[in-house]
Length: 142
Image 1 (cartoon, rainbow, N blue to C red):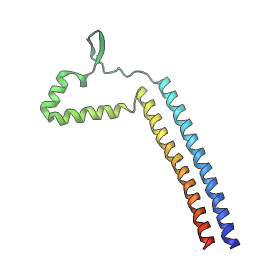
Image 2: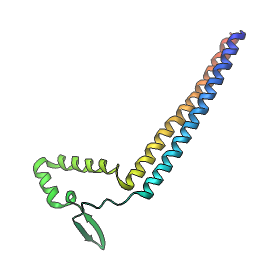
Image 3: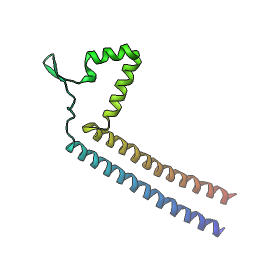
Image 4: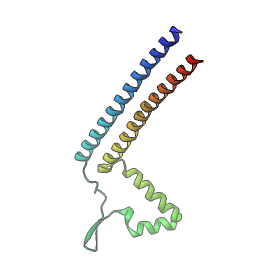
């Protein structure tokens, strides 16, 4: 009887330490990720290397890049249809996530998701500890 109580105490200690470490890892990932994304946002420049010109619509100026020109889209439709246009737009959007100011938002989102993963892992370890303690009490009473 004494041995099982000692084992339960040791397991509780290990789980509590694991939970604290997971919470600490979660906080560190969140702080490093968000501070990195702020630094990236403040130091990122504008990507306007391939601008053909500007188009003014309703008093607002829009950048015209080769891939946004009507001729490019028309030629792409002729070659591959609407699927090629969609695939090209998706590819450019995904590549754009990893450049400039949008990279800062990408890093922040990834850091938040990973931090939440560690946070929920710590919460699950707490619930596992409670259910193990409940099982020990039920076995001792039988």
